[in-house]
Length: 63
Image 1: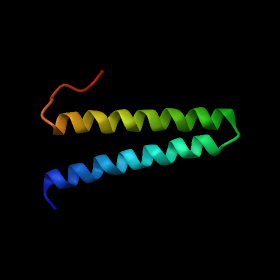
Image 2: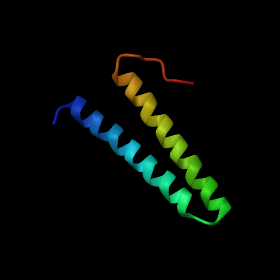
Image 3: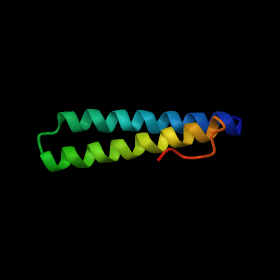
Image 4: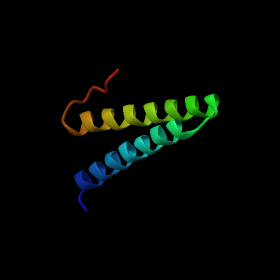
C-alpha cells in the first residue's frame, strides 16, 4: 500500500472510531462517562479532519 493509501486508511479508521465512541456515549447512562466518550470522539474527529486537510494540500491545521 502506498503512503497515500495508508494515510487515507488511518484517517478512515480515526473517523470510524469516533463514530463508535459517539454511539457508545449515546448508549451509556453514566453522565460522566458520556461526557468523556463525547470529548474523546470530538478530539478524534478533529484530528482526522486536520490530517485530511493536510493530506489535501492545506498545510495549516484547522483551529
